[in-house]
Length: 72
Image 1 (cartoon, rainbow, N blue to C red):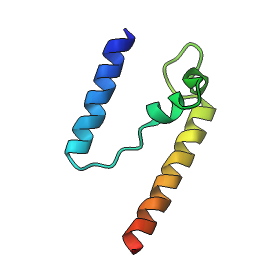
Image 2 (image 1 turned 60 degrees about the horizontal axis):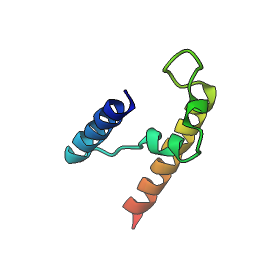
Image 3 (image 1 turned 90 degrees about the horizontal axis):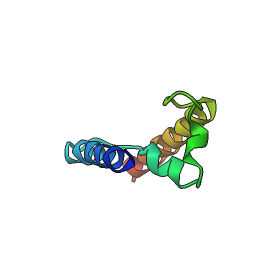
């Protein structure tokens, strides 16, 4: 159910953060649009083309901000 999925997701992201790993949390990004399911195939839990494009853009923004922060 949704509550369990959210708990698993949040625990996983928190565990990665505790290991000092950087996380680009696509769930937060997808949900911020108000229509997170548009990033997934209708009958498949994988990201569709739009989901991959948005993920690539988010990763690119993170890389750019990381590089900029390391130059300071």
